[in-house]
Length: 429
Image (cartoon, rainbow, N blue to C red; front, top):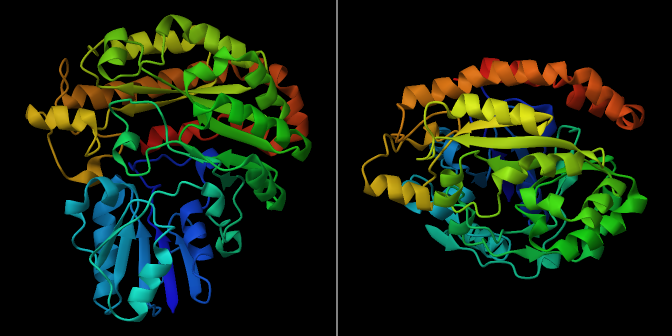
């Protein structure tokens, strides 16, 4: 059969993800599905890099669906269905809001790896089911390596996933609502084998939270040291509490961590069940990571019930005080199925269920202490201020990280100049 696998567009004007060179990586999950499709002719399209070939004929089209792409995916699906080509969708959104996905010929809920071959057999027999329930993969070593040869663009970073799931319970996060929420890990040997096969020196670990098992993380990073890779990752703030861990991260090539500070309001931390964060420790956390010459990128979310109109100015002062190197600023987005969504929906505070607006940029609910417009404007107005602050730190950061400049001028240019920052302003709605 001829199979087309699509990652719908993420990056566009006013979209859910601003264009940033650091995070543009090939669709790892689709590469794994392709590897499970032995004997079939598979094509992968990353719509952020190429157009969808609607003019071609396929036996089946598979689409991975984040929540904010749902309306666009409907349009894609309709075009293929008009040609009598069945479309099967899966991913996060179908797994937490399957009732909004009945436009597709088939929907996969949960992890697809264990049932993909059965799905292909059903398609060949013209007996495709409306819903497939994927089994959670307990032994991740059984998941094949992705077909990287099918990725048409050469990306700066190659994605690798060592673990799946997370043991935190943040109310705003969808992870505790998906079937694959439980933390699982590949063997260190399996990850190292994959890293050795990747030609690129630059790696992005796409794990939800590899630090759920600190011993595992240390064992992996220790084994990575001889590979001389350069990598970055998202992490909880607690990563800074273990000096040995930070040392191994640096030695194995870590140059940047994205930390979820989330908020500077203690009541918001408590209500959102972000129990791992201690605001009084933010500055020391950043300082301890900086001692190892690792950049820190901080995530902040606005719109919690504890946030008042002065939250933006207060966050700006904290950003300067704790000395992070860059930041991402988001509007609280209550994804369907999450605890925060259920609370807001029950009290009539959800303003729209047009999920294409659930982009981290738009306010889709009624905040407690400000209007939706004030929330969006507060974030938009804060970006120029923090960018100006980070630009002032350029020379100091260059001196602190001269070794990275010598090792990889391209990577250093992205990090030190913050070349994506100017684009952030233009892409905010």
